[in-house]
Length: 220
Image 1 (cartoon, rainbow, N blue to C red):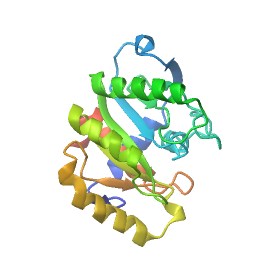
Image 2: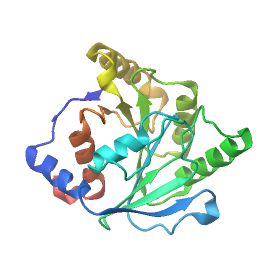
Image 3: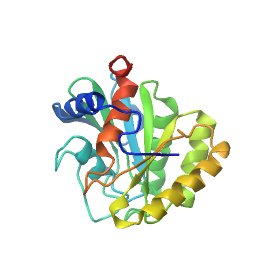
C-alpha cells in the first residue's frame, strides 16, 4: 500500500522529524571491507538501490543539504559503505549501488558481498530503505536483494524515487503490484513511500517514518 502524503502523521510529528534531520550531519567513516566497519553504536538507517537510482540525492534531500552525499552521473561511483552521523542520534549509511556500474566484475562482487554481510549482521540496523526508480520498477537485482533480506529477516521498505518523472497512475500501479507480491517477501514493509528529491515529494513523510523508528517515544 502506498503511503499517501500526511497519512497518519500529524504536523507536529512532521516538524519534529524535519528538525531532527536538519541537525548537524557529518561523514565519519567509509568501509570497503568487513574489518573496516565502524563500531556499532547509534541506530542505523541504510539506503540501497540500483546504480543511479538517486540514493545520494535522496539523502541530501532528507537532510536538506546539497552536497552531504556525493551525487554523480556515473553509475557505480559509490564503492564503499559511507557512514554519516546525524546529530549524534542516528547513523545514515549510503551503500554502493548494485546492478550496472562502471567497475570491474571482481570489484562489484567485492562490494556486493560486503553490502550483504553488513545487512545480515548489523545489530544496530533499524531499517533498510530500498530505493526503486519509479521509471523502471523492480528489476532482477532488486528482487535478488529482497530474497536475501527475506532469508536474513532484515526489514526493508521500498522507497520510490524520481516520481516527478512518471504519472500518478504509474505510481499507483507499482503499489498495487507490490502489494500483491508481498506474501512472497515477508521482510518487506507494507508501506511504499513515493518520493521526488527534486520536487520534495514524500520527503517529510519519509523523515517522519524514519524518526519514528529511532525515537518512537516522540510518536506515541
